[in-house]
Image 1 (cartoon, rainbow, N blue to C red):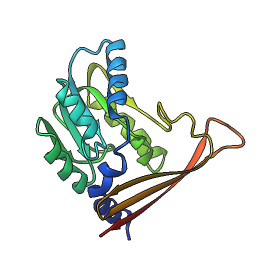
Image 2: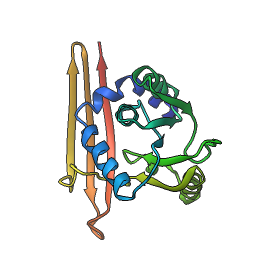
Image 3: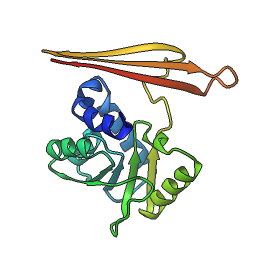
Length: 193
């Protein structure tokens, strides 16, 4: 099954798999960065927005949010979940807008979706071109606050509801040459019905 098809089918399970994710803490941390850099406006671009959970928290907090994602299934959920934001299909490398943004976020390691250095350069250039003067880009590369203890090993997150069972298995291997570098593998098992 091509990866694009897998992610479209996965969209309806995404929020269940990440139901334990600490979105409130992440948004509070990001807002502290925005405040520390004295960003004046509240026009926020949420790149690779997924199902819109971060977008909802920002929008409910007074930000004017535009969410961008390649996955139409994720965007459908985001549009239903967040009425006070705009969601559009597009890529982080190529999305264009006449509107400029005060804050661009690319969260939950989505910056790593860039397949090579050329894609990453195009993404960073695009983020810059979409910013207002004095704007800021915020993205995370790997482990985030609350995951520092994941040095190496296999980790299993589960979700059960009625006839639905989901297991997300992740394997983190710390590099022998550099303890700050981790390799990760993920496996998703879904039993529905």
